[in-house]
Length: 506
Image (cartoon, one colour):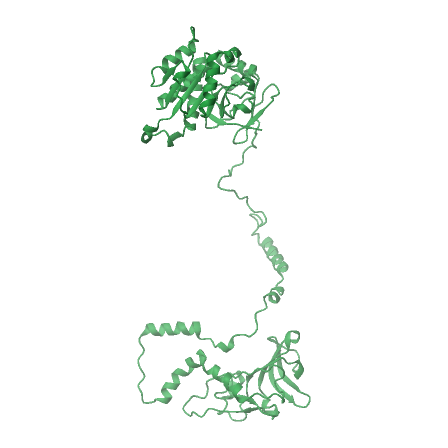
């Protein structure tokens, strides 16, 4: 009968538009196919109306949460449990041919306790009270069997089933406090009833829409302004963050053009750090060296400084510490020095002396002249004290390729030397040897260069060298800053911690 369902607590799902309702059944009308709930809850919130009525066509799913005791408190549970929403023990629910609920089975065990709760749940797809599609007993039995197999059911019934079936059997002792602690931990972790898991997913977007972030942040800002917590600065004023290679101390802006020459230059260079190094004409370069010599930077000092810088660059080009170490004595590098009878040749001889002192096999070519410059004579005297080899004929130069050729044949002023037979023969030998060439202080006119260089070393300030000079390097020969200012050059050193730096064309 329909009156058997009165007092049952059910959950009715009416789809996404109407939502889910829970309440106690107050009326069931089989003719109009309606069901009424008293004290209803809509989506977990208590409704303002005392009763709501649903049509069978609006119901998509119905769950029976509690079945009343039907007048026998011992058969279907305690009335106190009914008020708390807990169904009786051993009660299974079905639907008869009239669409009303009836009791199919009850517990027959007299020794089992009667206050153990169990939940009966039934789902229908169209209407819960439709008489055309009754629920079979096997359908309810399957649901009850799944409930009986749950972990919570076994855990709750283990304690009384053993004592009721075997009252005279002694209860085994527990293995100890440790096992009890582990059991309590298992109950805390796995003790929840699996039937209490909600069927619908949590609506994160809908829940987040209820949170007014703008109002909350405004309230926080108002509180912080009143309490004075922002006296040390607002959160929007974030401190500047620096990388590990940045300086945290404020400094003056970098000036990349720190060398100014009195005349317009035809070519400019820049260092690896971006500093601009302008080129100077040969007349200004010659004047700079003359003023430096007048202040005490004599030719001998300049030759020594040039020889040190050129030899240091040559040692780096030869391989540096990877090539020049005591374990590679059998692989000594060979350097051929081609020098002319002028100051540029004296610079090459000074470089050869330093290379020979660093265990480099040096072969110095210098043609025979009746009268030599004093600077060349002095450098040759020092070079003869080393293990270096001096030759005056090109036939004595090695026919196999050498490691490096240092070119000091060219001169800025004596252009007639390029017409000499020894000069042409030395140029031909260098071009046929196929060794890389380093030119020391080459002339700026490309027509005066007989040998194409891979590297060129400029002194003090570079000349406007062409493409045949190769990659340009600049060496510091010790000219003081006031000497630059005396010739009209505003100068700040671009060398930093080095004495030889590479230059790049701009």
